[in-house]
Image (tube, rainbow, N blue to C red; front, side, top):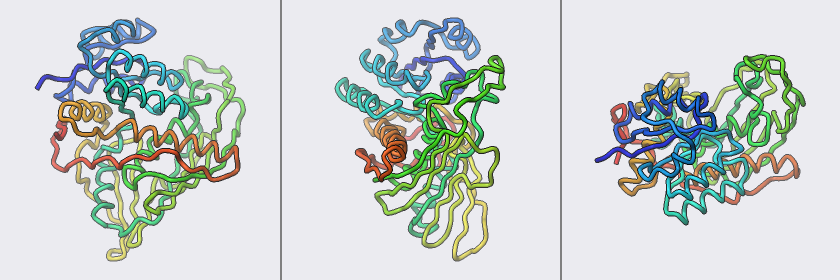
Length: 367
């Protein structure tokens, strides 16, 4: 079967792992990369052996490219996605799907009208760690899930990222930056969310960059940087999620799922591996769980490869637009709930993505 030809738009920091994906997955081939900065596009093409560096317009006009990977900054995710769809191409974007519900809905509607697919990061929920957790839950290892606690607490990105301003604008902040990892993992394990409530604040209205090359520059913060929320799942599970760029240090668990028969300690959803730990009534002590699935190292691009395989076979792809939109809807609802002092019922839902089978070799995707 011929490999699916891929074009990458956006050659910034995250692009490297995606440009390596065609060396790992035998069903996709990255044939071109584009950026508004042609020097950056040429540099990445040379570094990763990509045949062609070109303008965005040239990439979209190439009839041989079937999927566009959109690695632009969040505020232009929708603009680039809609341009790719208009060109008749399926699009797989970095998280979040868009910066608001309206743009997210436009992407899904445009893709449906064109008969193309939408995919979105994160695909970390397909990694060995989270797929192992999914299997444990499905197998009843902790009984019926009752509740979940999740926390992403740090002090922001201005001390390490070379251009951190966008993290503090609408579409950024800890919720829109890191929330997709946590919420996507939770929905993949526990199913869709029905309603949320929450509180949000801006603790430091101005941030000082201490990384290079913009050391000393000031950032005006225009999005909440500490958000605490409660969510109700359709399954009956009650969850809490706290995301913050205002915390210097903490001991909070990343994700813990509490069941009628035990507790599951879930690994960092921004990674693909473990550790996975479990405590059960039958064995009341923490035990390390051997991973049941592969892809436990950095496997970004797995979602794209799965999407390409699904297009060929006709099955649903796992890191799909409906899942990404549901996560976007939940994140927006947290902010709405804080502003309006109420619970917010979600207008969206999604199917829990099909679990990956065990026994896949590295680089292999199931039919």
